[in-house]
Length: 234
Image (tube, rainbow, N blue to C red; front, side):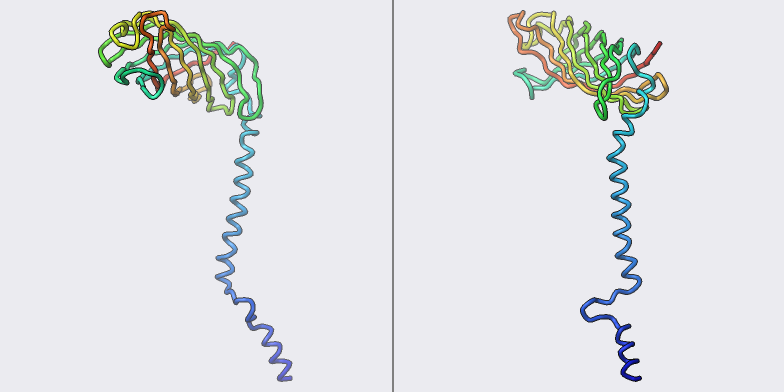
């Protein structure tokens, strides 16, 4: 009896080959496993969000035939990182009214689901460096709107136009006042209401005379901008 009882007690004792763990230790080790499970569920949910966003209706009914009317303002700063301009000391404040028309139905799936918009964008700029000067003209741009949610609508745009500026011929980069303006950039609309968006973006721009003048080094610049747009539909 003594031997049997002693053997039974030995079964309750912790094994020498398996370290003894208290209840507290078991709880501590269990929580990381539970956290990993929760993290895994969250990751799967996050990965599925783009598909869910793509299945939503177009961002506040922005579809073929929708008209955009807006105005942007930005700070234009020349750069010598690209091109052969002798100085980056050229700065200006740009004002960019815009009128756009969405010309295609919604195309694509997932993150690139969207539509194409054509925009007419008049431009006026006031140069403050290296001296005061003006620029005026207009551009035609193509803009692709990414319809990813009902609040946020990212976009990319690119285009060009014709401008006049009295910055030339007073700078070494340009010799005539009629110039071509090329632009490309990206941005995002935030729908504050069903029709009104707050807009922000950044563009790279190039101003040159396409070799029509004696000098044509060209001006390259980066321009962050903000503005307001109204989307109107029939």
